[in-house]
Length: 137
Image (cartoon, rainbow, N blue to C red; front, side, top):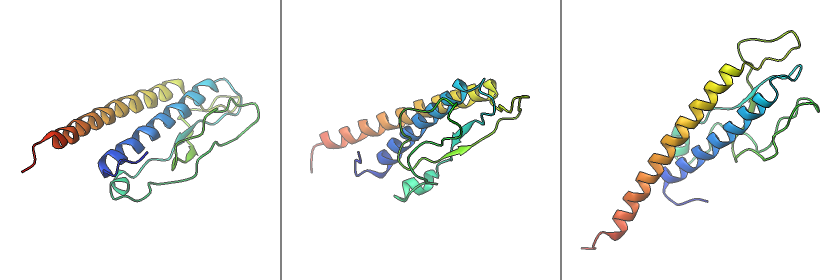
């Protein structure tokens, strides 16, 4: 849903991207014991391009299938989000490279950024409401 206000549209896109990132990180955590699993992340967004009305660092919607034994995400990624392989700092003997501490940091970072985006969105909406209520001259 677009609002026609570039800041609000960019914030909606950002919140969708962050929500998708939480799903990818949750998939990584679910596969922390799966032999050979490599963690994934979403490609970073270009917020400047979003504000300019262009597309971000883009990609297509969907899921990356690496092995039939891996637990897969059930919902598609947000539009424009591209999933990439993002190995953590360590790999176990069975080839799994998920480090739970690093995944928890990503999850906390995404949560904080989502809360900030929601705050900006709410403040922007209150300013729009205030402008609508302002008496015309």
